[in-house]
Length: 233
Image 1 (cartoon, rainbow, N blue to C red):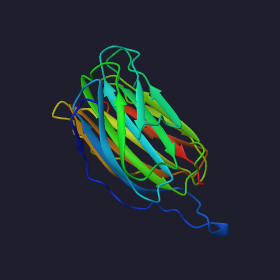
Image 2 (cartoon, rainbow, N blue to C red):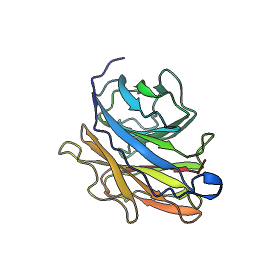
Image 3 (cartoon, one colour):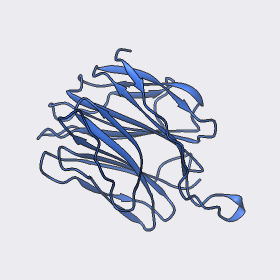
Image 4 (cartoon, rainbow, N blue to C red):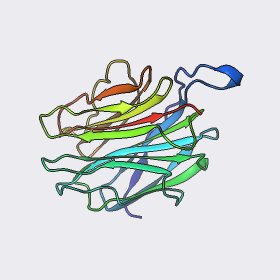
């Protein structure tokens, strides 16, 4: 694989996953996160350390190319394709591709992540990795995404359920080098950022309290959103 990679700083924390009946938990917990910076190329790889108690591994990201209809060609963890993959293609008006993937009961320790793009990204990519436990290890409840042009606000709605956690990848264009959105939506908690080649992204989470959750980008400049709702295990 080509493309220089630099490992981002990891974060460790626990959402409010209260214990339920039978000793289980009422929601999944985010236990670790990190990011990678890839030099723009058609393919790139790097190493992510997956904590020993992770039962879910989620990869969210974006890339921009001026050709409409493009998506990531391949994503792998230790050579394996994801259990689930969702993408929103590049679109007319310089709209950016956003993608989300999940691997359940992933291999732990130092693992290779690799990505193939259909064209060399003109801006970005951004890539954030989220590890969870106590979540469902068969499927996410939903994955939704959206992208927009320079001046239109980006928003979407996540189908969810009480006690799901929703992780959101919020990206914007910023010609100053890719500063992430400076705020999170009300009620969301920021846990990771990534900046590369004039794109900046912020990951945040919220615990759902109803059947739907509004997801709103925090900057209108060619913004994208990717939201994954993770049910309890």
